[in-house]
Length: 142
Image (cartoon, rainbow, N blue to C red):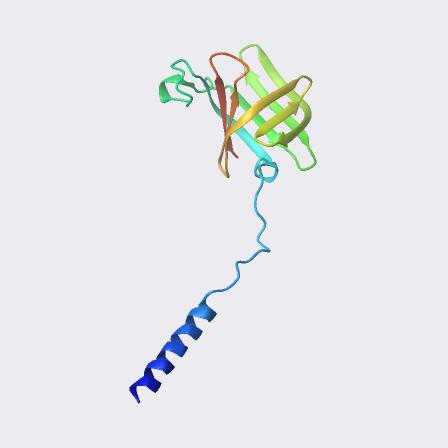
């Protein structure tokens, strides 16, 4: 009797374990860098890697001056709009954008390539390693 009861419990436990494991929902889209970047981003700081440690430290960050701003808008299909107000500069420019691997490419009117140091739902940080020391530009999703 104990053997039948033990076998029954083991069989029930196996059935419960089997039904508890289900396939993951493969219909949920995975966000790529090309979809994460869509929207309007406001510049929150520039930074120069003065100490060459490879990260934008608090002491290296420079926020835009009061009243100055930069907004970058990335649209589906590759259209790009930049709105800027800084000392001696104000206006908008447009162009196109693309992402190849970990690199954001702007064509507006000059080609600018930057490595995506960070890109998530709220923050985009672009790293420019073509200059020394390296520089970052950070944006917040609006």
